[in-house]
Amino acid sequence: MSTTTTTPRVGSAELIVYEHKRGWSALNLRELWRYRELLYFLTWRDILVRYKQAVFGVLWAILQPLLTMVVFTVVFNKALGVQSPSADIPYAVFSFSGLLPWNFFAGALSRSGTSLVGNANLLTKVYFPRLVIPFSAVLAGLVDLAIAFLVLIGLIFAYGLTPTWHIVFLPLFVALAFVTALGVSLWLSSLNVLYRDVQYVIPFLVQLWFFFSPVIYSVSDIPAGPLRVAFVLNPMTGVIGGFRWALLGEAFPPGYMWISVGVVVVLFVTGMFYFKRMERVFADVV
Image (cartoon, rainbow, N blue to C red; front, side, top):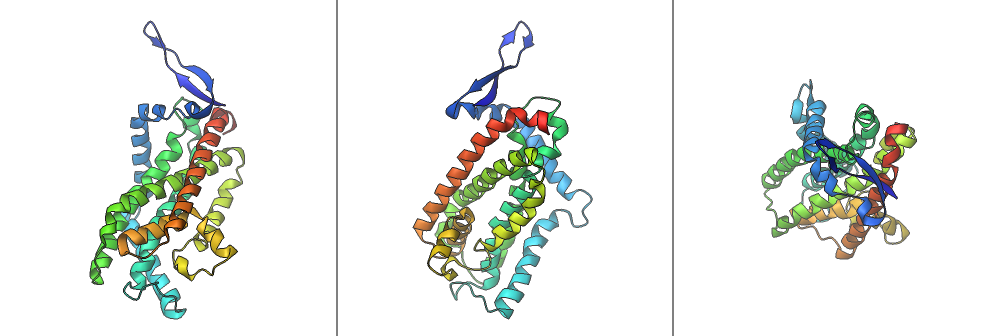
């Protein structure tokens, strides 16, 4: 059971009536479209705040993945001998293509996981669909993703590579990354309102999730058995594998992709229902 609103008019006044609905109608996603201007404002605010008074400004969107890629190449490729699955793909390009969706996902979790508590003043003063807050936090990360993508394209051409025709499917994997981040964020942001310890768990969760995602290695490097099953059930495995398939033509088993898509759908749908169920108590608890 979830709380939604309708807005009938009595004379010149507008009344807000709270109703309890069940099933898919409880999500009331059309209400999100009605508040699209607020969504735009909060998204733009998150972008401005992140780079306000920063020495390098938006250049951090380039420097962060670029410097991380250099460290990975030196430590894992040169020192430890970790290789990309194909001799035609330099490890620098391989690791950067994995960092692209991962940084988007990790940043989205860090921002949106605490977004409801961080906007407590809004939650307690005025009504709007609470989904706008974590949605805007995830949406803001697309700017960094777009900037870093241009750097990756530059790296690809600098190493003499050519993107495959699979690149036409890249928007689908961007959408998959977005839905994955939003689904997990809905759970984390809701739980953080009820249990403030969650904000301390999020950095550890992101770090642990990183090592279970094929950012610095390929899925083919994971030994067959229960360990590979666990990695395949990780939705970021399909996201990262899809990015590399679309950009570099790296082989990725279709079965793994469909498993990841299935896990993402479950995370997103359950996250939406749980968020809408808890939405009516946010203002009281936060």
